[in-house]
Image 1 (cartoon, helix red, strand yellow):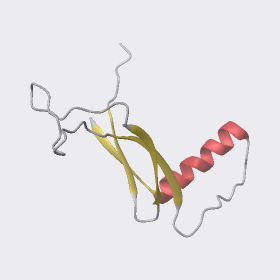
Image 2 (cartoon, helix red, strand yellow; image 1 turned 45 degrees about the vertical axis):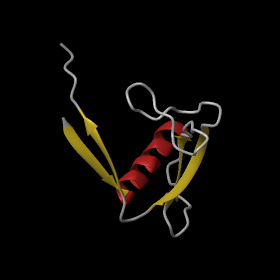
Image 3 (spheres, rainbow, N blue to C red; image 1 turned 60 degrees about the vertical axis):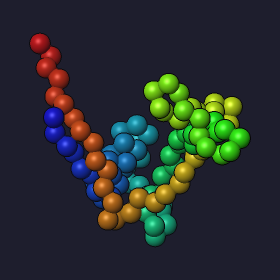
Length: 96
């Protein structure tokens, strides 16, 4: 396995290449504010069941019990700027 790290300008070039390949845009200037790219991430905000005294309820294994009726999907926003990196791992797959 190998870790790949892409910086801000690597991602900007990848986006421009994608726009050229998919949409046919030859010369594109990406319009972003001074903070860089705006990223939107969705995640669950887990709410746990509680006893009347406010203490979290636990299952037989000692884990807190999720209250599915109150748990909700929320969106978080942040900026991806010049000093940031996107990191992921790749594994080459054999075609044999």
